[in-house]
Length: 184
Length: 166
Image (cartoon, rainbow over all chains, first blue to last red):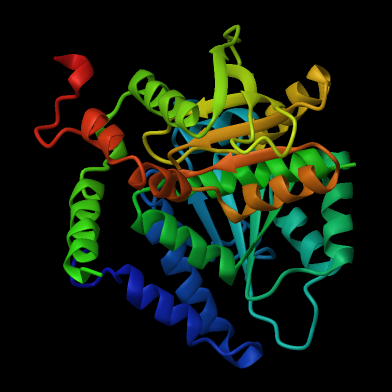
């Protein structure tokens, strides 16, 4: 049962749909998508650290979800086992005419520190372009890091999964499996 | 034409359909339910060798009830998931088993969960690639079962105890 200050599925759907694409609404999009990810995955994941900075203050990523699940029969436990995913990095992109491409994919790769594990997510209002897809294949070949592309449509699908009693984490596992199968 | 008959029939189906709660079944009961349903849909199936990593549970043939087409060999995997279940790897595994089997075989995955869009894309690509794999997922399975109310009554009794357990 959601508490008074926890948005329910319908308000989350509305928050996502009301964000106009583009720079002017980046904060709105980030807040909405972060709230959705918390609704979907916390628990079993721990509450995220929003915008954590590195010691020098040079790096500041959008959100990091601690994953303390070690039971490999559970989706997040499996991801922790397979990808050493102790901290899940999430970067949010709310772009309009600009494409989400190689630069954004590289930025996410650089934020994902070895100590965190090898799973990151770019959560965006539209699908990254072909260059981004090629880049993440190269990143996996070089460093075995997986960067998932999760769109607003995927977030909405996962809300539906949770609504009908399915585990939305399975969507993440399916996405990882699909990435690994298509990787070349 | 007596419209009340149709309405009564619809109401009965709705009442019976309301019993359909996957969580009241265990994996073995689910397999028996699906086997019986497939038999009624004109599959002639036998239990296949059980493989530790899945593979397929049943193998046999589907016969077109009107005899317009030849019987088609099928390998059937039945997967019961309490809360969803990842399907991409499962689909690829079934596809590879079907390919090795040869003889024009097709694969059928029957599950109570609903495919994610990621798994649905995978299925589409497999079929475009020439491997014939079909999925009956939770919503479609429900639709098939609604046309077999006696199966619903047998496996989802009103009191929650199946006939098989009595």
